[in-house]
Amino acid sequence: MSEQAKENPILEVESVHVAYGRVQAVRDVSFSVPEGGLIALVGANGAGKSSVLAAVSGLVRPGSGRIRLEGKDITRWPAHKRVGAGLVLVPEGRQILGTLTVAENLRLGAHRRRRQAAPESEMYELFPVLAERRALPASALSGGEQQMLAIARAMIARPRVVLLDEPSMGLAPKMVDEVFAVIERIRASGVTVVLVEQNARRALRAADTGHVLETGAIAHSGPAAHLLKDPRVVKAYLGVE
Ligand SMILES: Nc1ncnc2c1ncn2[C@@H]1O[C@H](COP(=O)(O)OP(=O)(O)OP(=O)(O)O)[C@@H](O)[C@H]1O
Image (cartoon, rainbow, N blue to C red; front, side):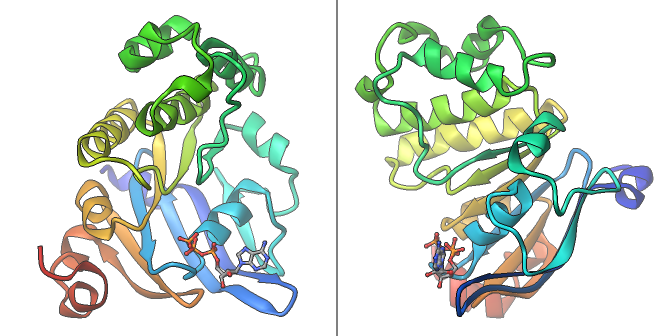
């Protein structure tokens, strides 16, 4: 990573708090992501990982704190404006439209950022499994294929930053490998990635930097390679292989 990238983070999250009524889901979370970086947010169920992504993507309004994209304060921007600026979420549970075909789902993704959108054919090169199935209803795809479609639907918008919420959830080990291979390719193409995962070991292996969330707050942060060896992190989140 260049020195310049370190000095100019593409995304900054500063002292963000998120509450749902009385439930304080995110407490004073701060981190920054260098352009082209891949950071992992890991932690137990309910630790607040999805809520951080919801705040960053504009699906929930933080109670306090700031979110900046390329130095611009986007804390009060609506979600669609963030998509327009190149900040795209792939939500947990995929949320593809089952009755629409694979191609139609992709077109929906392109529509969200029409001027910058990639041609569909580019997505079929990146995700060959979708090319073969382009005319099928999305509901006919396997779980792993649906996850690929959800990622492709985000990528067709040519995002600058992609937020991935639990992309490997519920997938067979072979599909988990494929999803992580796709994440590596996205990263190699220069797109910045924020990866939320239950599969902490796998996510930290893919990431440069990791943040471990515990009951809404960051408990450990650092280079992913260090976290993978940190006895506190190993004991609580990684276990024996
Ligand atoms: N819409 C909501 N309304 C009320 N409470 C919520 C809502 N969404 C999340 N929470 C609560 O906020 C806390 C953090 O949840 P969040 O989904 O962000 O955690 P997570 O780390 O992503 O967990 P998971 O992996 O289970 O999604 C939890 O206590 C959860 O029950």
